[in-house]
Length: 455
Image (tube, rainbow, N blue to C red):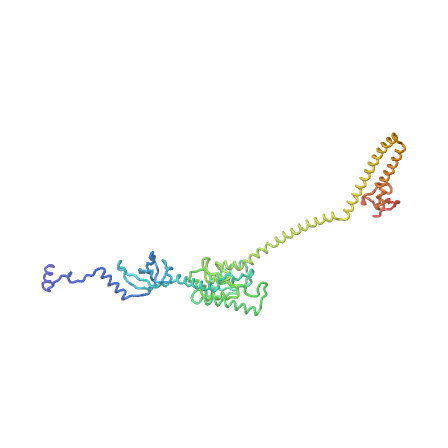
């Protein structure tokens, strides 16, 4: 039935050519070329935003990657001949804005973008701004170590620049209350995140400096180390992303810190976070709590010192007393050795020794002379009695003269005296053994004196 209808239809309508002979057939290259021309004409150069993935850098210098969003993706190529800034910062996960020409890569039959310009978004763009400002301010000397000012060891009043509702102020107050509750804090409230936060932070720093000058004119507080009312300014906030902390990377905040007449401590974010404010400030703390500990360190250490001071003073007093006692004993010994009475006693003892030696010498000499005399007398009698007797007499006179020289009378003639007990005639050598009222006799060169001791 169908064949008959078809045959009849062809005969009735006069179809001389088949469908294959009347349709237009394109090759793959032709179709791809038409699509390419259509894309380049209808779309051309555009800006596209998305996230980089599957990035691949070739040795030729060309960079291939895919730009994607939540629903689609686009193949991209950045040729080495394109002078695109920040191309070295391209990486997987980086959010970017791309400007380029949409075309077709005919060899694979896929459309792609030939990238002509790149603008980083999010963290990447902020990081570039951060590095540029950091280099600029460093060149101007805002980070120079020689301009950093030391913090006072015992601050009494500080200015605090932070949000009154943030976690940072709670951390700071908690540490201060625990370590130095007497520290006075002047709060300059401000926003620490979002549009306009940087201007508020800078104004808070300036307002604290103005307050400091005005209060000096009103009621100046005399300090031993400084005449200012505010000892330092603490700028702080808790952690967050780079976008959250960006207010502290603004140039207006850096200038305000640099121009502050009061030393500034910066404690922004966590330990790994660094901001421009950290580089300009006189001291950078890793966290708000760490900043509070640095500020109160002097007073906190002094509390421990004062608590231990009593024991330390006792120990030092004991040591001083012990040394003084040793010195006193040493001086007493030296005084005893150098006292005139001791020297006098030693002189008397030497005199007694000399007297004893003299007596022994006299006795020994007398015995020797007697023996010699006997020998000489015997010889004299045997040889020449008269001559021998004369020599013996001469020798006897000499011996008598020598004996007189060694006798106590000669000692008395030199001004010495001998004191004896009047009753017994015993020589007295120790005044301590004489009793009051005792009768004593003193022998001089000529004569004797009888007296009575009174004390």
